Image (cartoon, rainbow, N blue to C red; front, top):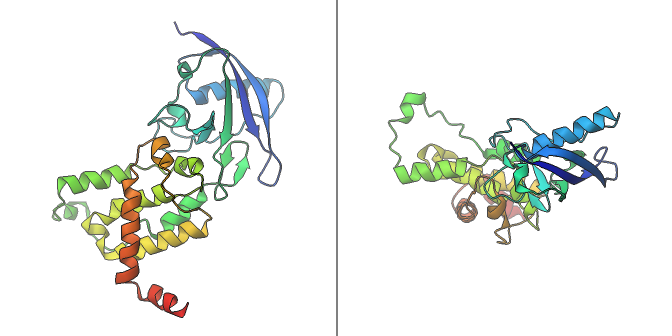
Length: 262
């Protein structure tokens, strides 16, 4: 039989992106230690609806640590106190009865608040649309097997591809940099032969999209790696920097022309 918790939630409430927000206090009574954090918020919302009040808006989808939608700052840390987990994988047994939990949205200029704890992370989509893909014809699925890829290379690409684009790296970074996200997306293609034909153009376009969205520069704080639910290594930022410098000196005529005109 699970224990029961009484928790005080201090939650950021904001009607929309143009309105001022503030913290509101709610009580979660008799919460089970077996509940996930999002299930606890569901209970709070049920109580609010019974009282005729607007429920707390927060993003969620799979609730299995796959999609990255459940992006909340819990007691000052993106996704909460546990390492290698998303918000939906955080359970209330991590807290004790009588605790006060502060819940905020991911805060960054590039992630504007939509309502309460929901932010618009469409800037990540724009970065991916700029170059996070392979557009050359690589053949059908069986054809991929004729291209030899060393096991270590394949594993490195898969490690980078594990990034779910939640934005925790941005939320924790003092400069709101998305370099860990961009680094992972560039790295997963740069190490594979299928990503080679668009290698230079990809990194330049993705960096341009990153900067245009209003993300800051990386200053090697390493906080991004610490809070990443998929534990993406900052080594991918180092590869991103190498790929960027390589692209500047080796290719893309339009970029060279623009630099010369400046």
